[in-house]
Image (cartoon, rainbow, N blue to C red):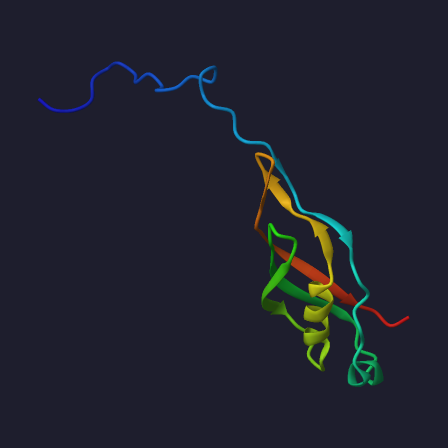
Length: 111
């Protein structure tokens, strides 16, 4: 006859001999610029948030992947320009800087 026996399987590794996961640190934002308003958006008194999918690069740069949620009237482009000016400390894994994907929110608020 076929099937599984009554005994239970033993784990291949125990917690004592499993290698520790490398330590990680998240991206640390050091500077966020205030985004520029376009004349059209200011005249319309348009406020809100633009959501951008970005990659914080290990070398210190930012790559804007796409606009997740935009406001139009030139504010999406202004948000992308502001995102490119963000200064940050890269995330690390095991002490080595790594690329990190994230969604950032650029807020447009008239003062």
